[in-house]
Image: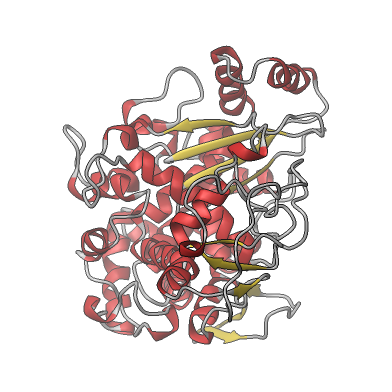
Length: 479
C-alpha cells in the first residue's frame, strides 16, 4: 500500500514529497539509497519515480507554488510569513543576552491572529437574496463550514485532476474522481448543489484567482459565487467566455469592496490590519519589488514581465491549462521547466531509508538568476537557506523540545534542546553539523555548555563551536 505524503512551503517555494510503499520499486530505491545515495543513477531513479508514479501528487503541490507566485494576496502572505520566520533570529541578534531554552518568544497577538486567518472556519448559507457568511469559533464541527484553505486546496485539486487526465475535463467526471479516494470536496460540492456540477467545475478556479486579488478572499469568493448563482447557470452561456465573466466579476468586486490602497497593504503589518479592497492590476508587480527575497520571485517576474517569447501571464495560462504544460508523456515543455518549484525534496517512506539520502531537484531558473541584494548570490543559494531556516524556526515555534528524535549524536549539547529538530541534513559526525554555525550566524548566540540556554557568541570563540560536549568550557554570562 502506498502512503505518500506531501506539502508545499509558501516562503521557500519548496515542494516536499515522501513517496513509496511496500512495493518492489520503492524497496529497490531504498536499497540503492543505502548503497550509494550520491550516485546519479539513484537520484535520477527517484525523480523518475516521482514524475511517473506520483505525477498527480506532484502536480497538486506544484499548483500551490504557482498560486503563491501569481495570486497577489498569497504572495503578500508568503512575504509576511518570511518576516515572521526571521523575527526571532533578528530579535536575538539585536539583543544579546541569556535566553532560557525553550525560547520564551511568542508572536504578538495581532500577528498570531493573522497567522491563522486562513484556517478560521465560516458557516456559509445560500439564500434567495444572496450568500450569508458567519464566522464561527475554531474547532466547530457543523455542515457548511469552509475556510480559505479550502479555496487554495480545491483550486490546486482541479489543476491536479486536469493534469492527471491530460485535458480540460468536465464536472461530472471530476465528481466521480472525487469519490475514488479521500479528497478535498466541501467547496465544490457546496457550489454544485446550488449552481450545478458543470458551472461549479468551470468557475471554481476563476473565483479563487479573483478572490486572492483582494484583501478579503473568502468574502470575495462568495460574492462571485452569489452573482453567478443568482443569475442561474445560463449566465455562463450568455457570457460566451470566462474572460468576459472575469471582467464582470472584477467590476462587481470593485463596487462591493472598493479599491485597496497598496500603501496601506505592506508586509510590515499583520493581515488583520489590512483594509478591505480589490488590489489594483499593478499589485503583483509592486509586491514583487517589495518582496523580491521570496524564492518564487523569479517565477513571479516572468509572470509579470514575460520572458523571451513568453508573454506576461504565463502562470495563469499554466494554471488554467495544465494539460499543455504537464503532458502525460514525453519531456517537459520549456515553460514547465522554467516554472518548476524552486526546490523539490523527495524522501522515500520506510524505516530503513537512511538519513541524508533525500534527493533535491533544483529549478534551473533559480540557478541562473542572481539575487540583486547580495552580489554573487543566486536565488538557488537563497532558496536552500530559506527552506532550511524555515524548517528550523517552524519547528521551534511548534514547540519542538527534548532530544532530537532522528539524530544519533546524543553527545551534542544541542541534541537535547529541541532547537535543531527540523535541521537537515543530519551529518555522519557531530562535528560536521551545520546547525551550530547557522545558529551563531543568524542569532549571534550559541547553546550554553549545559544546554539550558542561549548565550551571546561574543563570550565564546568563533571556531570549534561544534555543539559537542567535549569542547572547551567557557564562562556563562550573568543575567
